[in-house]
Image (cartoon, rainbow, N blue to C red):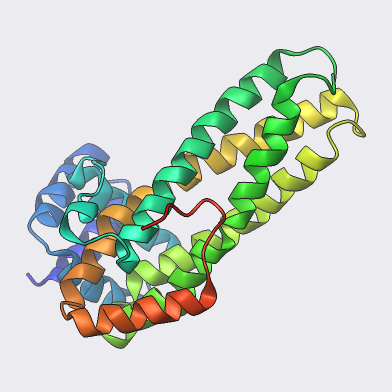
Length: 249
């Protein structure tokens, strides 16, 4: 059975509710033997056959489980300044913001009233601004890396990541609006809305970063082997610009 047929069979059985643990175990065994590039090509064939982006996200999550959600070792394979080295470094910064956001939210949820003197409100604004500032990071992916992958036949992961960018963008903007209006809102309402946004953004963005580091970027290294192409992509990224928190090369 080819990769496309196998993935189709796995999805049908998952959607049918057939012994999830057994099917997922079989899926993990299969995915462990498939290269990122081959998996991406198979996923694209499935999209063309009518697979939904949501189903593809389920496959990405299974693939991530196979990889053990370990931190990508891309930075050991590429030099500082390389497009992927910079993207992974930015992810590390964003993950730090998410850790801080969780802690700030815990403090706000434990409070009884808004107090402008407490540092968590300025910290919340700072974190929200930086998460929104990550738009330059997403633009470099969407306008430079993803199109190059698609030119080389890798469509599935970029399509999933674009959809998640749209979803995350709306929530990050709402987090920023909440942070800026903290003292103007009813505190109970503010606390509830903040908890909901943090509860969505933190796990979703962590998962998104893990999929990019371990699946999409790994596929990019595999299907773009030549340094000349990476040098061209770097120039295109330079024209777009970087985030205020981008580490120096």
